[in-house]
Image (cartoon, rainbow, N blue to C red; front, top):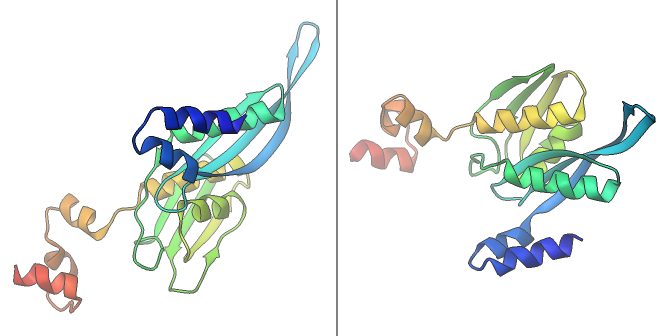
Length: 193
């Protein structure tokens, strides 16, 4: 079962074993799929799982198996292989607006003020909550497919960048990025430097 996986993780030593325990898994969807073979139809289950530690790591996995439990376990392993670490601002929100397209899904993420909560639907909400965002607004446009919406949200989060990363990409200092009129202490110290 799942406990065995955690035990093996601990056996590797170091911090890896502790991190293994902190991940939360949420099953987004389980669908029954069939494959037509020579003797008739072969039935299997497809599981879509979102895995995150509620702080800075998030991943989406999808797997098929003859049994639901096996499909979920395989999907969890798939999600852990494809994890990203999206940036977060001090309000536990996204640093800036972002819109992303993945196949027929469009996701639009906007920062929200403290106390707003996660305003999102479907798989997008699950991904944002498990990534640790507390205040964010999201809109799903286009397809309602749960797997593609989850993957689209992951893609949107991977496109986010902190002000420091944005300034570095443009070859600027934070002071130049914000302009001289910005009175925030972290910016003021960059200006004085």
